[in-house]
Length: 304
Length: 248
Ligand SMILES: Nc1ncnc2c1ncn2[C@@H]1O[C@H](COP(=O)(O)OP(=O)(O)OP(=O)(O)O)[C@@H](O)[C@H]1O
Ligand SMILES: [Mg+2]
Image (cartoon, rainbow over all chains, first blue to last red; front, side, top):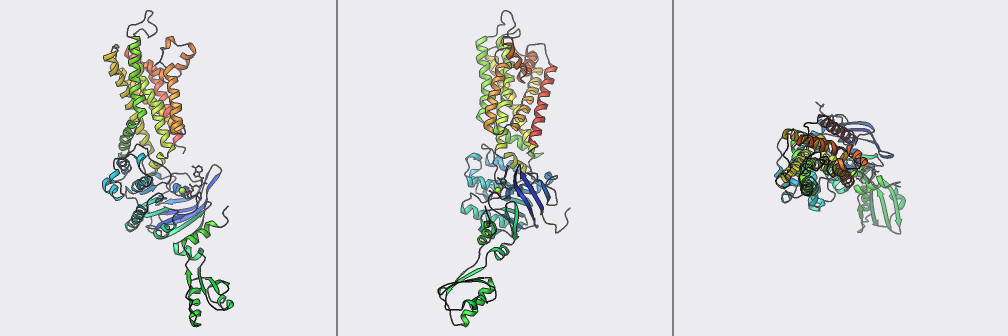
């Protein structure tokens, strides 16, 4: 049995090449029990390869991997019973019917899965007897998510779960992740949607060129890499005085129009200064950095 | 145990829904036996050599039982399995904890049953229409057909594991099937084939099955040597499939 407090996933120094293509160069992170971890990164940065190695679907070239206390290289069988998985690119036979797929995937589970409830949950009740080949992209995606969850796994890997879903189905998927979180299921979510990452994930790992470039809570990433708060306003002030305010990193001016950058503290000091001067600019605008700013700063720089 | 049964059931439905299955495994062998049996009738020829001493209908009935197995093993199963690999179905299945062995087991089982069904259809078509002699040794026919069907299913597994796409598997499969069909005993009888073609035919896996089935249908009886050859062919197929599939 696993010692209490051991993370559900521990990856250290993962490496994997396909021939001469180095897909993963150095990836390390941990996922705590019950945590929702997001993996972000540009196309081809190695996200899918990483999660497939963790599921024992690909053989890593190097690194230490532990998933639910098991080694995906040697203990795949035990591992597969405990995890649920939604793979980015693999399909089902065109002629396979929805209900047959669910039955087949449920057959590895312990108990009896409630096929009809699951299909209803995912808006597939009407497609029960439809062949996989006739489903729309979003319907296929829903089926894959349903299949990932059919055996109530302890840990789920969702690779681009919401790609191709309509907005309503996407919300539905989000609600489901919230439900999984309440149940204490650990989730590893690969996504390109930053709103999704911010809303759903406890922590994020950003991968670029096969290596982790940043990790932390969404708020931490924004604070560290978002580039700070920007305040713009019109007033008569002294540039040097503004620059001397605690937390201010830069002051730009065009005529009487200022652009002041800094951290949250800088914003408070700026407000204090303005009010103290009896100057209350009516055009004051504050731009808070977003996860997108942080993400682009992390992966955009020096991209060839 | 549940995934094994469920896989077999799923594979059965999938293969049955495939139109090539119906055409190549079930319809063609029955149609061919009807056509050739009608053309040649069932009177032994003068010298008695062309059809191994019996009439055409009696000669071809066991041969087309064998052809059904060849259709399944050379065309249907390889196309199906290569398609699975091409589209990542095996990976998805594996990721869900369903042993790939369960899927392959399901495919081999279904393929074997399908071959036997195709063979049964040949017999059911031939007996009331072209009037072949009935089998001397029914048990021998059944056992030989089962061994042959299994051997061809395993060959199919190897082809499906080796060929990259469903399209490639189907193209190559139909080509090989056609050659095997013509020189392996289900087309012109061996006695009338030019020597070179007969030699090629000897090296196809169809010939041992055709001959072994004819031996129990109207010939000297159980051909253990050819059953051994079929067993070896099957084992070789299984080995190739196992080796290929364990590599990705
Ligand atoms: N089976 C494969 N054979 C050869 N190269 C591969 C294979 N799978 C992935 N690659 C390569 O490995 C690199 C990483 O691919 P991977 O699929 O892990 O990226 P990803 O981060 O998931 O990208 P995306 O956001 O587009 O899904 C890419 O350069 C890709 O071309
Ligand atoms: Mg990917």
